[in-house]
Image (cartoon, rainbow, N blue to C red; front, side, top):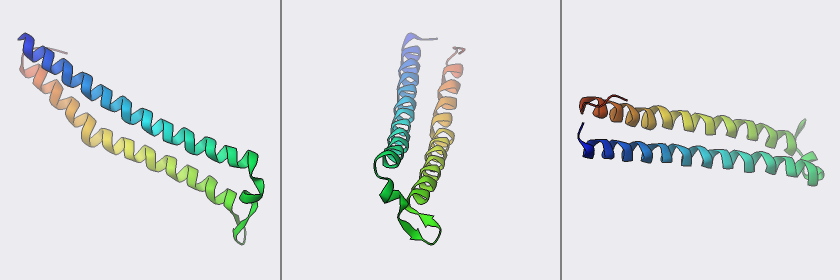
Length: 104
C-alpha cells in the first residue's frame, strides 16, 4: 500500500474518531447538567417542585419525566447519527483501505 494512502486513511480515521468523541462527550455533558440540575432543584427548591401544574401533577413529576424523555431523545439522536453518518463513513474508509491493498 502506498504511504500516502495509509496516511490519508489514518488521518480520516483519526478525524472520524475525534468527531465521535466530541459528540459523545457533548451529549454526556448535556445529560450530566440536566440530571444534576434536576437533583439540585430537588435539594434546594422543593417548594417550586411541589407546585401543582394540574390535579395530581406537580412541577417535580413533570420535570422528572422530562429528564427521562430528554435522555431517550439524546440517545436516539446519537444512535441515528452513528447509524447514518459514523458507520457509513467507517465502512467507506474500511473499503477504501481494503481496495488500496491494506488490511485492517
